[in-house]
Length: 363
Length: 145
Ligand code: SF4
Ligand code: SF4
Image (cartoon, rainbow over all chains, first blue to last red):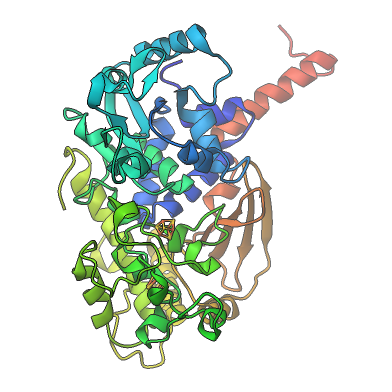
């Protein structure tokens, strides 16, 4: 049934409207929508048809899909993804071979022009795309065909968004990101290696309700990628006071001091890790004592070393983030943090007002 | 709705002298304004705490301010939801928990009864049908043709 709504899907599974409200509350919280926008989203989701998602994988490690489906079961992310929106995914389905290919064709035909195409993995260009083929078809021709019927394309993971690991030097297969191939459809980059599950589902839900979210210059939704890790890191007060761990087992490390000198890329990395966290909100890498690798930024594999501090000039990272961070004086108080939190809501609201109909708007 | 009925969320300014004001104090002011507005216009107000990085101290302060009122409710639907009235009638804390008991969403609502606690008309309609069907099967409650 093409026009079934999300509320109807839940109802069929025996839930009341309360389940729908619970779903809305958690999704709008993850999106950091203002109260007015959250109410509006709930109102619209009430009648919006469930999204149709076609999920295709090329040069990738399946980590993104693992992030999505193993996040916490039977969590909301998997509910939104598996039960509500997914129409085709070759990794998760039971069918194989020709049955799988025809299932894909059927799913695409049924929602041609309307589906949300999720792609993970990069796409190799040389030798007519021979380095990555699915069912005898090159990734590049498969992607071009699938994008033809998509309303928008979501490049999930740093491989699809920026090339990622396959693209890393020396890029033996000539891999490129999705946005190099899909040029006539809006492309939303949900980067991260892997991205946070709730960010992926949040983008699906946002798209279903409001259309295209506002994107930064790297086409990432600003709702999730608007702040740097450093902006919202709970170790920031130590950074501001100049208290740094120098090794992984020194006194500073034990005291939970800032990991900047151990190579933390938080100041130049935009992602939602400090607020949304990982594994159902358990913690995030810095909370576990490891510096941020910068996994949601282009080319992070080749940027001078994961454990080399940003202050060591390698010419790989922009200086702006580093200097901006170091210039921020004084300890971050709770008030400042609250202001940041509210500014995120503000931005989410502005995004909704300005960014819904535009094609890949620039900030 | 006149401008005076709009509850203006509190935006603490980074770097400004805090005068000992904490985030919890600011939120309490926002709630006080929201209650007055609710009385006048029946306009409900929601503060979503989920993504607000409150310090442990802020949380304690907020808990201490709001306390616990007379009413609490548990909802077992898709998620588990705990609703608690604070010691201020009309100010509710609504928390949604994931399957592993982690808080998925936490908000303060200013309203007479949080919307999620009400049975929706559609659900009541389905209940009526279901109940009629059960009675019909048992032959206890046949309606005359
Ligand atoms: S440098 Fe890294 S650990 Fe230090 S405050 Fe910034 S993000 Fe946190
Ligand atoms: S902390 Fe940094 S490297 Fe780690 S997942 Fe988040 S953005 Fe990626």
